[in-house]
Image: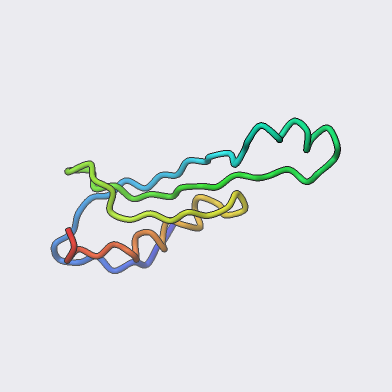
Length: 83
């Protein structure tokens, strides 16, 4: 996949990943049983500096956002001046 993100002179190596967290509580069973719309997931998309293992940037989205859609926005948000 071509990202077309400019690479600065003082580049770093980052790992980009995501994980999902279900928005839930004790009422999920009752909502499902009685046909009430279910609650979804939130997703944490994160970029981590491979060398220092510190988070560089992140975004939180809902379950409708695909992981690959967030790669370029995460890389564009990295501000090397703050590292």
